[in-house]
Length: 221
Image 1: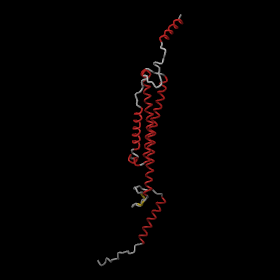
Image 2: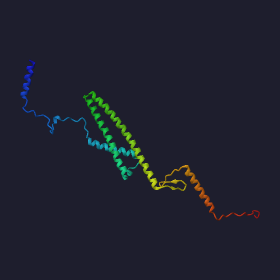
Image 3: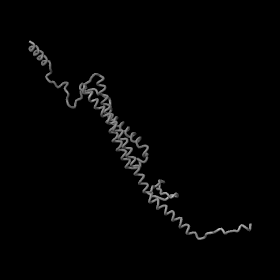
């Protein structure tokens, strides 16, 4: 009896069904509001990327502000290109950090709404680990940038010193063109002392007229 009743219901359903079933069926290229899902997060990723680039630029400037002035970067082509590459690299890391934080927040919202699944907690833990690693990499990258620009500054200083050349100061010390003192070894210092001593001896030998105060008898006074 049950089978007969189910058959009758199925026949009635088929009789009422349209001859063509192309209605309410998704077609490639056709937009159907019924099939559109609401976004879980209201984020404009284009604006987010632009914001990350701004943050990266500020971070690089703050990291090297006490090492190399910004004016020097604008005048030096190598530094200018390096600054752009550093900003792009740092912006990519910040973008990954922000997107992971957004996905983590969406998981929290879903779990808070009751749509929880054990897999969500596992993914949440993985995202937390990734976010922690990205924060660590950001700190390490900023410190590495400082050391790189410090090395560049030292190289520039050495090049300028070599270009200016050393000179002898009034105090007998060897100085560079920018006022820096050039340190020398013990052998060079001994040779310098001998040179000064020889110069003094030559000056004494070149004295032609030596006036000696005559002995004046004091009995006459």
